[in-house]
Image (cartoon, rainbow, N blue to C red; front, top):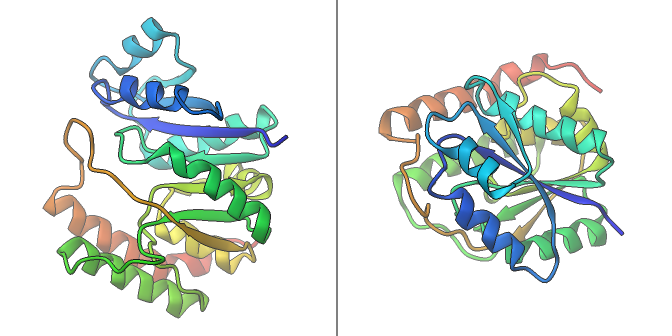
Length: 230
């Protein structure tokens, strides 16, 4: 039996975390999870303690890259065979987890991305234009087309978990997916539906979105070529 861990980053997600965990607990397949509380300023930590959730508490806000690495280290040290990156804001539907696991087993993939656009095309919004640019840069630098490079729902096998647990500055972002492809890991996609954030406000406002795009594009075009090979 595969041991599967859901890694749930949480920064100021007090309104969402109870809903997310309760939904997971209602599944027929009960998955292990760990909430990585990234120095939240709201009641995220208090709620985890009160409800007995499994969580790791970062004493300060360290950012998504270090939170992601912490989750991977946790998965490796506890002997999990797969780890799923899973948002703490309620956007991800847990009923697709089984499909992603099955896809990984069927294709012998190292990474499976829960994609919104395998079968359907995205609407022509400003956000999707950014996704198309990232998609084109990944295709240019790796030769592989990823239809939904900004999806935050990604399943990793044990080999990728060990790689990511021992690398610094590996945020769960499109440039890391591109690097994994260039390192020889097999990346596949499976169709999923995403929901709107259940509560709270995303940090990706207009200004942050522009900075995000610039950083990802710079990494894809330049920085990734200086990463060491495994």
